[in-house]
Amino acid sequence: MSAPAGLANAPELRPSGAIAPELRAIEGHGFRAPAELAVDRASGTPADRRGRLVRAGLALRERLLAGPRIKGVTSVALATFPYPSRYGLRDALALPWPFLALTNRVFIVRYDDFAGTARTLLVSPSDVDANAETPFFKGLVAQMGRFRRVLEPLLTRRGPDLAAVLAQAGVRPEDVDFITYDHLHTQDLRRWLGPAPLFPRARLLVTRAEWRSVHGLSAPQLPWYCPRGIDGVPDDRVLTFDDGLELGHGVVLVATPGHTEGNHSIVLHGPEGLTVTSENGIAPDSYAPAASSIPGLRAYARRGMDIVLNGNTLERGLDQYLSMVLEKTIAGPSARDPRFPAFLASSELTPVAWAPGLAPGLAYGDLAWGARR
Image (cartoon, rainbow, N blue to C red):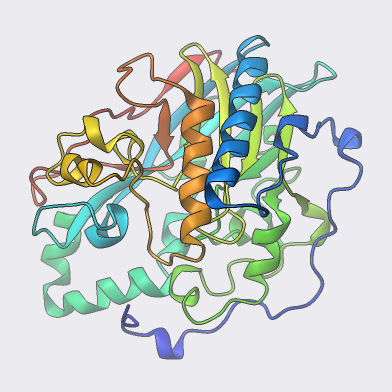
């Protein structure tokens, strides 16, 4: 991958130094460590590893389905933007379009913790303006040159600002308990958690591997992380975990490394059963290519591939494949279309006029499940 314009001069993130302390007293924060996820992901053959993860996923799925649901979730589109097709549908797409469109959403999740306290979790609360400084996307805009005024409105759409989204949902900044992202590509956290934070009480939940990684990135990673995006975020606002974290009734964070070193997925038990959110794939079609109508995906499946990676950096390709198998196992068939798993991409493949033929077989769009408050 060639470096986009401006990368050579892009400042690095905060250098290696003090890393937020590992989350040791899980129960002290009202969390639990899911026993099902204490799985050996390293030893044996890839087939052995897959088998262990499938068994773990089935066990977790069975237990969660037998337990309480979240109180509600609302998701709202914050931005739609172009993304290279060769990354989003890696090796599978049989269309000439160089770009497809993804829509990034924030998920406002309301649940009770294990002590019965009402909690609010924000999943993927993007600061769209600040995130535009991510070198890869900044380079794309620079390549538009004098045509930017024409092309940018054609290729991108802006949703409401996050503060307006929360106000509409009846959520005050001080109501937010936790923030999480499935990974930290493109994210600038300073507005939410920095020296003058919008969310005065919120803590970031992130895998220890991801938080460690962003403190010392290598060249292939740098185009995808927002420069200085974690500057000024105090260590005591960050809680890290390893295999997984059960936040309360119906909410589990599951380590799914591969897309990045410390990728994780968000599992919710809602009115449609279990759903899984991440950016390992960009649509349910990524997990069931044999059922997809996107040109090329069925042929890809006939060649023996049952998963289509979202692979812009391919930090750990085989691990990402196994993580997507785990996600698919936990999610199970979608109540909307059982040909596909109940997977909600945090950045979802979106049909647009400038990339015909790229419509997912199943799309969730904006959600409004359960209680608003």
